[in-house]
Image 1 (cartoon, rainbow, N blue to C red):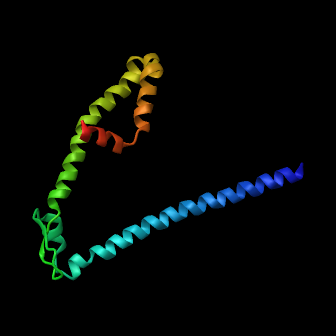
Image 2 (cartoon, rainbow, N blue to C red):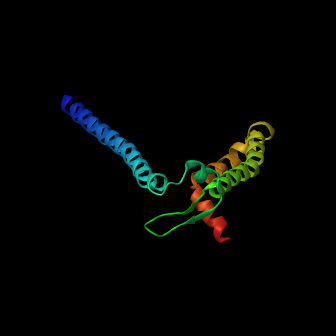
Image 3 (cartoon, helix red, strand yellow):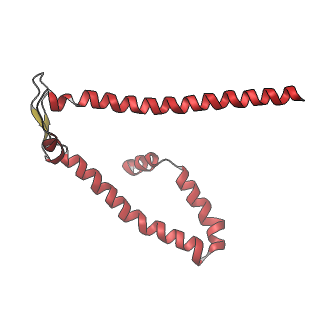
Length: 138
């Protein structure tokens, strides 16, 4: 009996170390990707003498393909577009989310538990990229 518990404990410990190692590897990989992007992207500011304010606040995007660099690297239009898209998505989704939550908890808890909650859980389980792809193709 003691042998079984020792083997189970060893396997549990082994898998705990494996999963912890995988988690740490993901953290290191994420930091490495960020460092690589910073390393490769800093040349825009150091080698080609673009300013950070030009990058953040200019809407002109026309980078040069030559080795000398140059061109314009304003990302303001992309940043603004992302912020507007997120704000629009929040403006559309918030009323529906609040209405569904209020309906499920206050108005009809029995119907909400039986029908609405499983549907919401199914929709939550689908990655947002799938919704974007469906929206793009439709």
